[in-house]
Amino acid sequence: MSTPTIEDAPQAGNPHSAGLDAAESGKVELITITVRIRRFNPEEHPDAVWVDYQLTVDPKIRVLDAINTIKWEQDGTLTYRRSCAHGVCGSDAMRINGKNRLACKTLIKDVSPEKPITIEPIKGLTVLKDLVVDMDPFFQAYRDVMPFLITTGNEPTRERIQSEEDVQRFEDTTKCILCAACTTSCPVFWNDGQYFGPAAIVNAHRFIFDSRDEGAEQRLEILNDRDGVWRCRTTFNCTDACPRGIEVTKAIQEVKRALVTRRF
Amino acid sequence: MPAGTLYRGREGMWSWVAHRVTGVLIFFFLFAHVLDTALVRVSPEAYNSTIATYKTWPVNLMEYGLTAAILFHALNGLRVIAVDFWAKGPKYQRQMLWTVVTVWVVLMAGAFYPILQETLRNWFG
Ligand code: HEM
Ligand code: SF4
Ligand code: FES
Image (tube, rainbow over all chains, first blue to last red; front, side, top):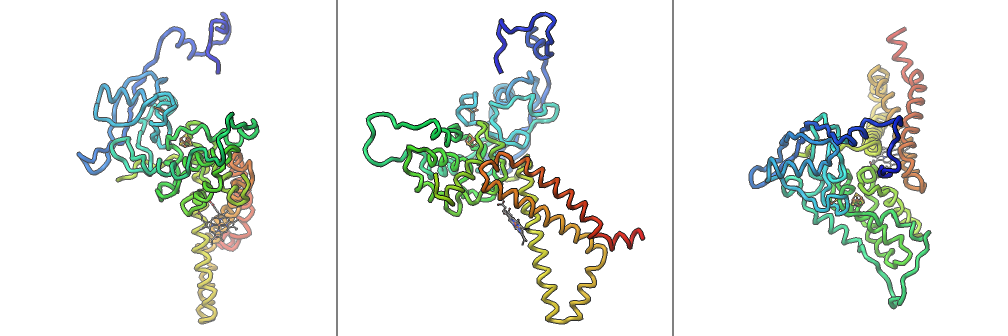
């Protein structure tokens, strides 16, 4: 979608959307929302509890803005991770209305603000406090697939040439920001945290199908483990959850097929 | 730690749940079926009386349910195989699921009378 500029501003008489009218007049219609957050503080209480917060906001702000407002104006003890606020760093994956999303890429108007908006930590990793989970097992699985270029022989003096066609084989999986939305949406991972999980497989895929890399055999052997790709039951939760639009299940299936055919 | 809300997965998650539930159901049916058939070696009379209880309407309804479970499991199993082996399978998994559900509904409608005719005749003459 292009940003409206002076040149393509609608002429008098052109159809004009209500939204555009409101935007141009500078009027913002505020709505009152309830944000229902699953809070947990092991130092105070052994169980997690739901706490409701009411706030009046522009429906076009993001869920992260709403949470920030709660922290800054209502309860400073609310704990969560965020950094870039623009869908780049991958630190604010959380479960909003039952689905994994990045709070900074989700608009209030898109999560049925007429009903309470539920916010929970991502599932399957130990909750440390409120929305903060222990990411160590997640990053360990990532490290275990050796997510770096493996080559043999002497370093070339020039770039490692790669055709456009060869790039396309793994281009999709280079987009990962390691937010864990996929891995923590996976029913197999919830039941068994030993499973490598979609994110680790996505990042293995990124190198397995890279024509410059020579470590594919090693990575495939790692993922041939009983906790590797074969645990995937193709529920597609990971694909639906990925904020970068990576076709996660497709990547996992390509790794499975590479293990069967030994072609990559 | 209480689990919180149910994860709101889409078609893929629910088709997997249905696939596992029907798979386990079929397994238990086969388990019972092996036992009741083996009964004929123990005592033909006991076998006959067991099979006689199968000719009642609750068991007839269960037969229709079993057909539903096997048909869904088999059709969706073909979809899972396509997702596994066909490069475009993951892309079209949703369309394939709705195809599976449509074929399943048509076959279940077709099986309605043939399977339930005894019970229907008893109830409605
Ligand atoms: C009619 C022919 C059948 C076909 C085409 C079929 C196909 C499949 C496929 C492809 C899977 C793998 C699903 C996945 O990876 O997510 C599967 C799983 C399974 N099947 Fe079947 N199946 C059939 C019959 C049976 C029978 C007769 C039983 C019971 C004894 C059974 C029980 C199961 C169970 C328990 C699972 C595991 C489900 C899971 O892991 O989620 N299936 N089936
Ligand atoms: S594949 Fe997508 S959902 Fe998974 S960690 Fe990477 S960016 Fe997040
Ligand atoms: S805060 Fe960086 S991805 Fe949302």
